[in-house]
Length: 222
Image 1 (cartoon, rainbow, N blue to C red):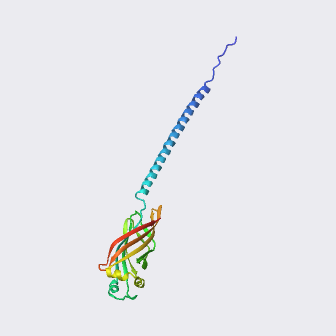
Image 2: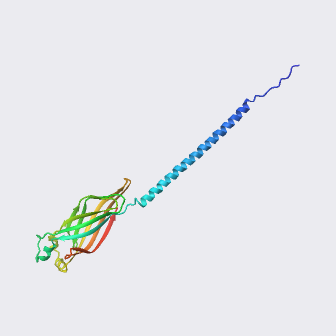
Image 3: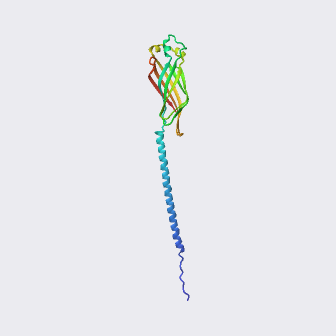
């Protein structure tokens, strides 16, 4: 009678299954770790980007906020007025020259570059003289003082009926108009084109050569 041999089942497949399960667990854990790392990295990048944007907005609305330049008429002198006053019948041969001091104030953190400027002088609503100011630049948060002369058109003044009474009173009511067109540029990113117009009315005291009751109004165009 033949001996019955016991059949032994192979263990290899079971061991292989355990190894596969372990590899899958490690792979899943690695993927989860990588996913969490990516989320953390993306969150940090987003937070840094938002912080930079907030800083830029704060700078734009505070330090880098472009303000309007200001023009001021500081002083005004008329040369040759003595001859006009002393002469009973003054003629066009009398020379009048207006010497004006004007300041351009730049309140910005960047320089203000302006093109050629025109200043006109009025008496009794008539243009009696004009001056051309060459282009220039006002440095950041600085004031540029400019001095220029205006040759007055005497023939136009003499034709005005109110001149004699104004000379007798010792005061002239005159006005001026100045226009400055320029550009403010900050780190080549923020740019602003500005046109500043200033209209001033004033009383000129002939005896003291001083400006009185000066009233200036500015108009800003962007």
